[in-house]
Amino acid sequence: MERRQILKTAGILATGSVTSLAGCSGSGNGNGESEATTTEDTNGDSGGETNAGSGGSNTVMMVTEGSEYYFDPIGLFIEPGETVTFKNQSGSHSATVYKQGTSSAEVTRIPEGAEAFNSEILSEQGATFEHTFETTGTYDYFCIPHKSLGMVGRIVVGEPGGPAEGGMPPDGNVPESQTIVDQDSVSYNSFSE
Image (cartoon, rainbow, N blue to C red; front, side):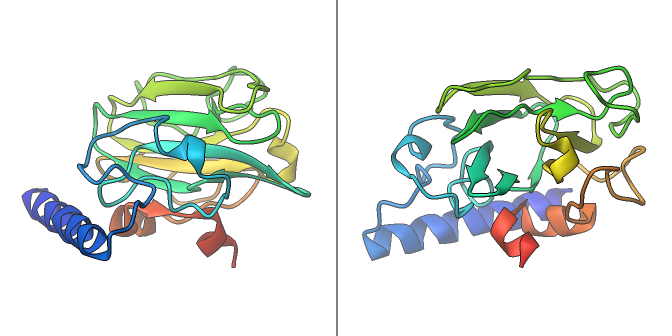
């Protein structure tokens, strides 16, 4: 785990240096802090670059784009104790964990002992829901109104594990957990290509 932290820190520093040299006002705040609403509000696209990874915030956008409904990033890696902000970019969406008995979930796809979450449906553009992930493992989640259309996502906390490993959610596909760990964040666009 120490090696991963060293590599992650080196990536943050390198990204910050490149951004500073380029004079860009990229979507991250450049200091590695998690800010849920500052930069995403001004970025109207859904390209996935405003999300987690090297120095970005732990924000998952909930998007309606034409006939597509998705979370971006679709795969996110965080450490235990970190908070993820789910932000409604467009449309009406929820972030609801696969835990039997939670909303329309018929299966459980979170680690044993993990806290379930359900944002309920957020309809206002820019509305947010936050959840702090304490238990290590893999969490699969869905959007209540668009579950049958494949709007699903995956968060890996610390390291892969739990009932979500070894398969896909029943309503769609997500990146493999190890891919998420290796990349920190997998954008919807790169996954769906």
